[in-house]
Image (cartoon, rainbow, N blue to C red; front, side):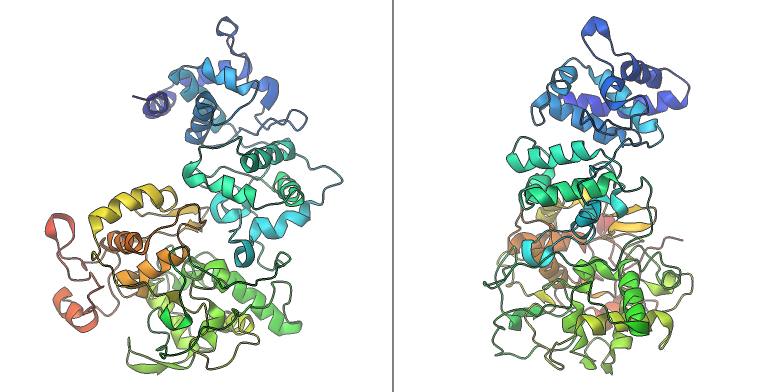
Length: 541
């Protein structure tokens, strides 16, 4: 058993002992406040302060309130040489597994505290756009909060809080990742992020997060874009470069005619700081907010029956090419949809997203937002604004939908997909596809189970999910799945039970025969536990 495994194997014992009034936390407190002179272990508080809030002058991290599993992992990385520090490295070498577990549990149990402050000559607001919205169009750089949770308050045991960390500590870590002096994190994510930031951006981000509150604050939705860089080359997806005629259109956004040549350059929506003035601008701003916080805003949440948002499938808040961008959808409607055999307006198309992707029938209201109501008016206003300058009726815009994948030469295999999911997807979406929420805000959406999209959503089809995965997942290009791998992962994800198709008529067999006849649709297949037929549905109630 590795040293890390030994540490983690004692975590549950430590927690249970703490609950029963035993001494592991007291042992952690002793190490934190006094150290252990006999073993040459210095007190943590000497650098991290008694409250665990860190120290700007020493560049010592805030530890109070961080997840014990995360803290234990970082100590192990000092032991393994993946992190290096003149004090921390020899300190970590002297700890036993029980010490690591105890001191990690102690700091995790402390109330969050921060002694951070940004230098007066650094404009903390300058890092806001990168922190909150990233730079996906030009550097394939997601927002920091996309992984570290709303406001950077942390997400789970892998993505720690950035909010309230000392500026000097944050800057030193960004510099270490960029220079290759710190490594070992999953999929080399932070090395890739830090390497795409210049020195001024690193300082601005460190200052921004050092000044952020430790709890989730009101989200920011009206942020300016980073200064765009010129684009002279065509855009490639992680799996393959595709033409506009190869777009997978989610849930039949409209047929894409053959023979259209790819546009010389992709459409660029207006910048986030270019909102219209007056009432329209306010409605656009509200729509942008609802798009990102669909499941929590009190105006849209009553119509959401799971833990999904519009931005979960339409990345960068509906802006990202090859992630079914909203600017390309707007110009394609009204359109005939094979899914319901009628011409739908944009309002009806959005209602379909609530019905299937957000499982409205299991919501508080039990229904989709009403036509001409505030929610649909705001969302349509936002989508309309994103399409400013886009050619009306152009249903083959470059970047529309998800790029189509070639048919899998080896079919798609859920067993292979399970291994790939565990290696590349479970880090964010959870081992059981449960996703991750922070104070109700979706950080990583559930992929199956009662809080996921239902059996009627376009994403439940293996071909649609595979196309999305190949073009967009993982978020950074440190891992590039092949088309075959994307097919296999999609098959594994969509081979799990999820909420029932709203069109269900009481019989899985009849519903499958009417609505699930595609070879890429696993509804009605005997692929569940012990050969159970998929499509029984699952509910959170």
